[in-house]
Length: 525
Image (tube, rainbow, N blue to C red; front, top):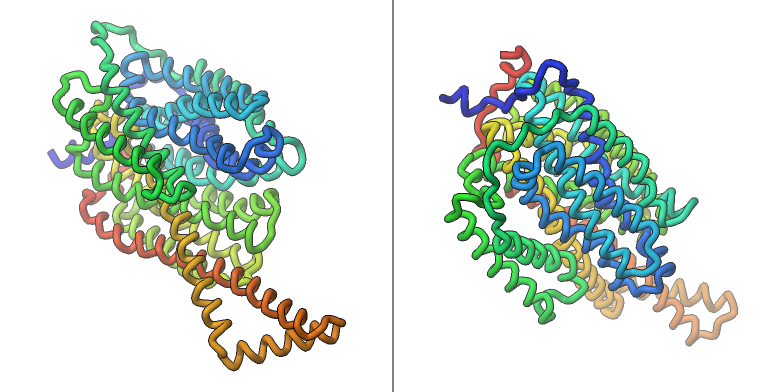
């Protein structure tokens, strides 16, 4: 019984199926979705100027995609079963590519937001179904290599997005961050058409669709994502709008869960959470999502606000980490065949914590060289967690439950990223206010070192021809500017400390996962 529980789902595909061509085809689709989650961030200023929108309005270009994405993720298993895995994946590709054209051609903000919603609905299907198809296509002994290939795309994508987006915005036009999806989408479409196995004919009568359940899911997850995306800008619970989102989230999801657990035809099979590996791995997946997207949220802001990097320079700063992820994946896949997945997850977590500790030492004098190794180490640590976590979480799931499990697992990673951005944005703002207040208080405390610094600056301005009163005012203004910069740097350090403590707090959950039998995987047993 233990052997059957820990077995990975193997494919019942015919001999003629080319497994690696299937992997490349679905990975191209997943790449489109992952890159698009981050590529837009570097183009918001250009969109704002081009479309005549405010910053708050143009932020919905990001939020609308995220909202649509989290709504569709848990529905992917049901949609694949109802319409066929191949048909649904190809439909998602077509929808995403067509929506990309609409985004690039949009002449107003409302049109762009609607197109981004369509992109998010298509993109959610690409990510979850790609991983599900890989688990159903490859036999157990080839799963580490297949998941390593897929994982390289998922992890490198968020870093490739800003790099590619920064180049296109700086050298071409912001619209090309969407048009660039078209050739990749077309290539993926034809590859899926040729290489994905045909769906079996429908032999059972389709049951009526539970539209109320779908509506509850859309309201619940949509409100939750809006709460996370807009909470900081709306000052959280001081805003009736955010309070309404919180109430709608809880009410809709509670009713949805009750309805799904009592239904014999659920649109989201929550009973799949009876598998211990899935619920434990999903909690860790939220942490990994927070670490993956959280650090990538803070670093570009630091680079642009403190180091004064352009969009293209910021993208190039993140590129080595993306390349390191691609290099690390085959190494992690090999290690996963030799060592217990739980040990590798812990090693990856400790590596990320070490990288975060390095990032807490940022100063106003930090340069590109100071960020290079922490970002490389963080990439290796993330890979070392990501692949074994995928295998330990989804490996023991029976084949019939894989589609539902991968949809839920992908949702937790996406939600983790959204939570990270919401929490870290709030922490960044509030800690900057705190540090600034402390530094300003020190400036007015009569500290001898501060007084000496004021006198030196004042004397310098007097020598440049300013009268004493103006010279003193300029000296104080310069110190205030320095205090603001120092407060900002200290607040970034606090966000990295917070992320590190999150990893420390959640790593013990690894013990809930089952011990993997990876040596048998390597030997093909």
